[in-house]
Image: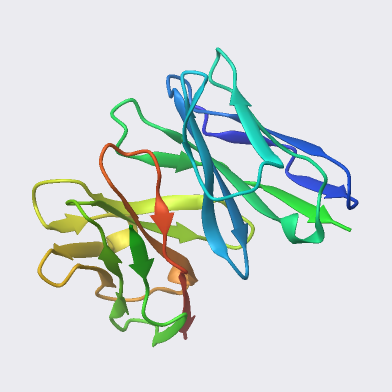
Amino acid sequence: KAGVTQTPRYLIKTRGQQVTLSCSPISGHRSVSWYQQTPGQGLQFLFEYFSETQRNKGNFPGRFSGRQFSNSRSEMNVSTLELGDSALYLCASSSPLGNEQFFGPGTRLTVL
Amino acid sequence: AQSVTQLGSHVSVSEGALVLLRCNYSSSVPPYLFWYVQYPNQGLQLLLKYTTGATLVKGINGFEAEFKKSETSFHLTKPSAHMSDAAEYFCAVSDPPYDKVIFGPGTSLSVIP
């Protein structure tokens, strides 16, 4: 069974640009969560989608948004990038019973 | 509100020595508790989890953790450290049903040969 895949793995953008990250969950998983990891703030929850609906949201500004498609693949978008958005963005999919999350390798975003 | 604290941002142990990584949490309801490991430039891998039932939980790579409700703790242990255990370890908590996970700040484990 294939794991969680994230594309791209690395990304370099400049301030003011926008970026879209993609996550494909494990087959059969309908819940996808996104996290931001930085040295200063650690791992922070961004949002969670289940069956194309945002079910939970963390404390991030509106520049951070996401969506989920009917095949459970998810995208997150960050608009008007700031230097502080440089981070590792992790995606996780949850098993049908909802008691275990499987993480992808992450997308490392660098904002110059 | 849920929160997780991990005592010690960095822990060093000798190869073969006991590994003890501390985690305390706060939650308004009986929580789900997790330990994850992260190797450099990789995502997170689940070591073990507590949801319900037996309070002593065994995970992968010889790790185990015990849920102590009275102490609101979920410390991670391994009897004998191996060089390959050097990594970042994160304790995490969520309120059932499982959807939003709150992570602790992490503990970097070094293993000295």
